[in-house]
Image 1 (cartoon, rainbow, N blue to C red):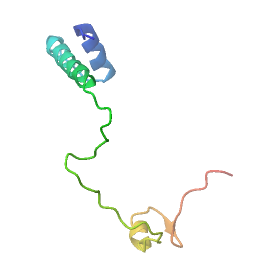
Image 2 (image 1 turned 180 degrees about the vertical axis):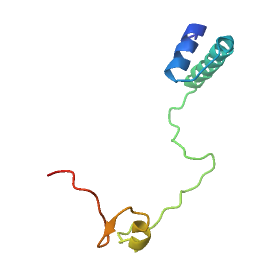
Image 3 (image 1 turned 90 degrees about the horizontal axis):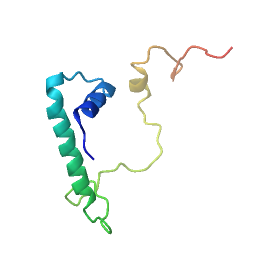
Length: 95
């Protein structure tokens, strides 16, 4: 797949990025470089390779899976525009 200048201009327009006409050849070349790299990556055999979250073996820190009330009601409601009786107050939307 190859990206020409008109396609690069269309992509820039769709992305709502202003690109000067004289910069379109370089942008098209960059797109072609990216697509070439993606094609190169698709040639890599990854059968049997486990998905990874990091290049170093590690486990993510997890909190204990315990149901609590959070004990932070006051802190949570502190920035609420309207809070009543320990809850967020919202305007009625259905009559």
